[in-house]
Image (tube, rainbow, N blue to C red):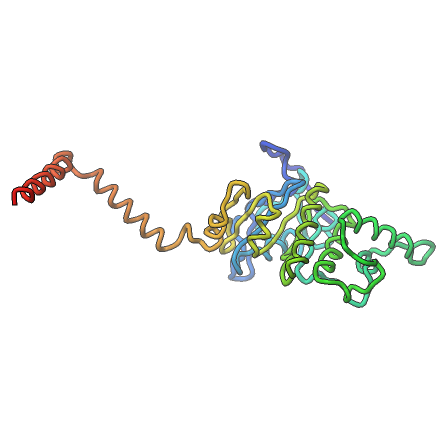
Length: 299
């Protein structure tokens, strides 16, 4: 059962975040996967979670999804401090996660996939008509391009399969939807279809966490970008005020590597040397330059 305790109201310039993570740390034996991760998600916005391979994105998603409970740190959901001990607790709380593998049954039709494990019954039998109506209504709200809800998922395109997986996550009316690499291995047209779906989720008031390696997709739909590097926060950017180069630099660590540190160190030493030099020495340097120039002219 989800454990909850009252948390103090957050003081923000806008509404309080629906999901807030503070100091999230996760270890797997001697491996430190996450260290002091902070993340805020507001209703009606898309937050892109980006980083290189091994940055900790998937681990953080699994912490929020209840697959791997954190070792340290707090999670606040809708103003309450919560403990997410299992995927069921995460789902009941209002966090829906669509993993990269989608977890769809290819041999079942769209309706069966949408209600898998949550089938509606009437008088001890499946309410096929009711489930089909609700499926069409949900897909219509998402403007999904599905030819029929009674065809097998195996015959759908990659974008359509992603749509079915996202639609299934919305049946519980979650406040936060986590999408793990939703455009991976999709063509141009299918990618555009999924990105349009992400925007519709934002328009419906959901907080969306988008995990992606594709910076074009991130810049197309995200409002904010949170960068992870080596299991730590390494920057947070507002898309409207950030360049592509700034995000890439934060992902790769180009803003904090050995070359830039060495250059900054040399500059600091030079500045300190000038500041410590006697005033008469500093004045003598221009005089010496003038004398040398005069000798050159006389020759």
